[in-house]
Every structure is written in structure tokens, then in C-alpha cells.
Image (cartoon, helix red, strand yellow):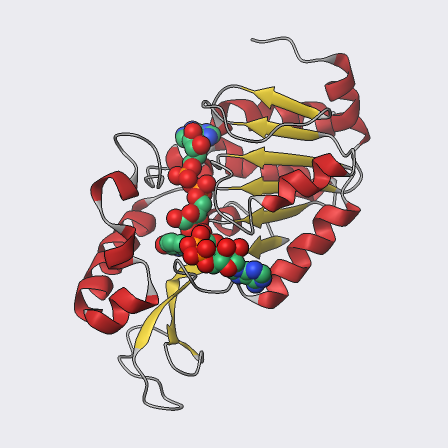
Length: 239
Ligand code: NAD
Ligand code: APR
């Protein structure tokens, strides 16, 4: 066990408004593949331009819907791990805790977390590609306007849902501690959230087996996995 800095332990114990930012690496130990990891990443095996853009959906909708049906099967088989469960325990002990996730798999909520901001939508929901109306699957066309339905996730080139982005920016601006877990910190605007906290001198704890572009005076880098580190950090925060 790597010994933790005493000031990091103080930040954990003293946190009253923690914010936890999570990316695809948070779901890796639940069996959901990440996007940019060298071998296993989805974008190493599939072309995001052909599958995760509005243009791709307009050009060949069935190929995009089939790929998301495959991803939905993976997500349906996934179960929250000890890291998701630790965050739900932390929220129970510290009601102001907010999770801001780029993930679309709903695993935080399945572990019991309630304050979850979903920046990139939810893969288990559909929405109309024309009017944005949400639809319960397995409807095929929009009940409001007859438009084509597509997964309610944010594709490359699309804007993030404004209310979610606003809530995320608000939470980070109020935070007294930020954890950044399992994200390559490459995709905007999510990647600017931990940088905002660092610029404000708020301590940021990064949990990732690999290096990321994140840097700053108040950054603590914990090399390793979400399911290993989070239970340990939450035990200190809640003891
Ligand atoms: P992009 O550069 O292609 O286009 C979106 C740009 O607009 C980004 O630079 C982003 O910073 C900006 N933007 C988006 N929403 C905004 C908002 N509400 N306010 C201000 N600026 C906003 O971005 P991208 O990296 O290609 O992808 C866009 C989003 O789609 C990313 O967040 C990405 O994570 C997401 N995405 C999701 C999936 C999926 O399968 N869930 C796949 C690909 C991309
Ligand atoms: N624990 C913690 N981190 C992990 C683990 C793990 N067990 N396994 C992998 N990681 C790290 C990887 O080192 C990598 O830095 O998780 C990160 C995953 O990065 P990406 O695959 O780029 O996923 P993410 O940062 O969430 O991508 C952002 O891009 O394609 C879009 O919308 C998609 O939301 C996604 C966005």
C-alpha cells in the first residue's frame, strides 16, 4: 500500500463539498471498454467518425443503431464495482457530494449514488434526432414529430446538454476537493473541469494507471485503478 501524503488525508477528512469527475476508466473494472486505451479501447477497434457522429447516423443509421445495440448489451451485463459502491457510501456520509460523469452506463446510480450529473447522456435511453424528445425504447420513431430515434448520448461534434454542463461547472466552482477518476482528460468541455479546480487552487486527486495532461500545484496523482483506490480514499474521508 502506497502511503498517502498527510495533507491529502487532511483534504479527504475535511472535505464538505467534494466533486468526483469520472470517465470510462471508472467502468473498466466493470467490464465496459474504455475509448482510448491502446489495445482494448473502442476507438482502437472502431472508427468513431463512422459510429459516434450525427453525420454517421444520417448516412447509415442502421449501422450506428446496431453498434449501440452491441454496446447496450455490454452495459446491461456490467455491474458496479467496489469503487462505485465506495462513492455511494461517501455520498451517504456527505450529502453535498456530486458525481460528474462522462459515462453513459448508469453504473453510479446502480451502485446507489443519487447526485449524478451525466455530461454525455445515457446509452439506455433514446431521443428523437430531430426534436430531441426523449423516447422509451423500443419505439422506432418519435411520437411527437415522427423523426428517427437515436441513443440519448452526446456524439462527437454535438453540444453537451446545457443543464448538465451548468450543474457540473457550478459544482466544481463550489468544490473544496475534486477527484478525477478514469479519464484521459482529452475531450472538451469535460476535460476543463479538473483544470478549473486546479486554477482555483482546489486540491485535485487523479486516479489513473496512466499519465494524463493534467498538471498543477495542488494535484495529487495516484497511479492505479478506481476499484482499488476509491474504497481506500472513502474510508479515510468517512472515518
Ligand atoms: P467536438 O470538438 O467534435 O465538438 C464539440 C465541441 O463543442 C467540443 O470542443 C466541446 O468542447 C464543445 N462543446 C460541446 N458542448 C458544449 C457546451 N454545452 N458548451 C460549450 N462547448 C461545448 O467535441 P468532441 O470531443 O468531438 O465530442 C463532443 C462530445 O461528445 C464530447 O463530450 C464527447 O465525449 C462526446 N462523445 C460521446 C460519445 C459516446 O459514445 N457517448 C462518443 C463520442 C463523443
Ligand atoms: N481505473 C482508473 N482509470 C482507468 C482504469 C481503471 N481501472 N482503466 C483505464 N483507466 C484510464 C485510462 O488510463 C484512460 O486514461 O481511464 C482513461 C480512459 O480514457 P478514455 O478511454 O479516453 O475515456 P474518457 O476520458 O471517458 O473519454 C471521454 O470521449 O469518446 C468520448 O464520450 C466519450 O465520454 C467519452 C469521452
